[in-house]
Length: 275
Image (cartoon, rainbow, N blue to C red; front, side, top):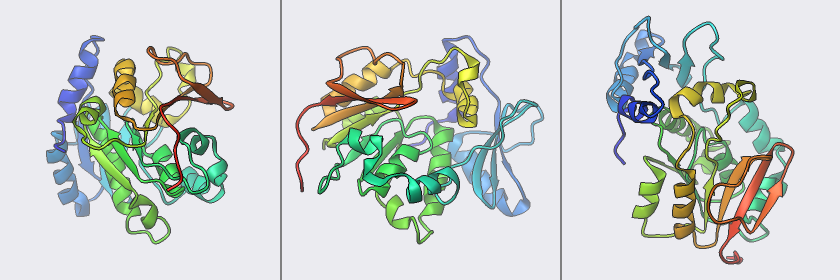
């Protein structure tokens, strides 16, 4: 899958809202990482620069890639890390197949469906599903986020504790609707977690959301994404939503699973059987 030019992607996303396209640069954190920084600069079509007017910096260093929002209100760097932090804690103590996401995609004794995650983001949900034994194909259309995810998967592939997990995760970069329309084999489950159009800035608690909102915007094509998913999935479509958010416009879900802050809307097509 060819990488999109990140500046072009942002221009398209922000043009309709008449917003200024953010200035994004790539920087090595030390001279030892200059070659890697040059590689990412070329792949993403971003300048290798120390421009003081930059809005975002994609930093390249010993711990891989991290995205930093410039300015006094920066929430700090964002990176993909499957080895430590919250992701590692959930892998070790997250409740296994009793987790709500596991129930939503249909994981049961002897059933580990093949899943297409069309809104991969930082890969956390996909990692949970891969940890539980599912083969997961991830699609991320925002080039900077996809770069962070690719880097995190690369580093995790060398760690003995999680390498077998990330071997079940396969990353594609591009528009999920177009990719789904081009697939010749149907996944059993298609999973969607589109960006919800928050209007209250206080709702953007996680630093990832504070950084990604200016880059990604809202997923206004969520209804089209749902329709493409329903056309493709062989067994079910699962949509993750904020608990009180409305369903995506279109067909109504067959049922929902509701937690404290999130809800999973399930669109069943046929039953998953033991392999």
